[in-house]
Image (cartoon, rainbow, N blue to C red):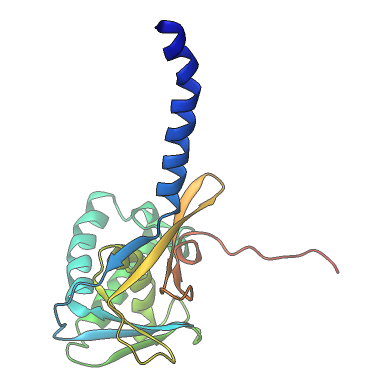
Length: 199
């Protein structure tokens, strides 16, 4: 009996491995939460227009205020790589400027476009963009972003994500059902790789 079980063990392990592989290959689906937004921030990307609830950014700023004070304005509070090289004083100054601007624009339209360059240190709406980028992956993971796929009339009710390993760290890629990309986390969380090789 024991010999038979021992002989069957490799087969059982192989079967489990196949099932695990099949499970990993299943698409990870996120359904968009249907509740309407009273006021939205518009974020245009290459293949999509994203609508973000302004309350989400407001709630984040309230949480961030406490976190920054508790951690003495350490740049490690953020995952967004734009903050990584700042000093604690830089972090405090940038946050203060962002909050000062945020309090002046209730009800005013805020529209961002990934193709339009914004300086990190700016006095205009662009100063909010690093904070929007910071929370965007989490909001996408929670289905709390409303989406329109460019050049597609049908409403978007769900989208997909896949995990992508970079140097041992896991980042997500969010896509529409047709495979067009919505957002890559590594574009926000990692330094851009510049190819300096000569052709």
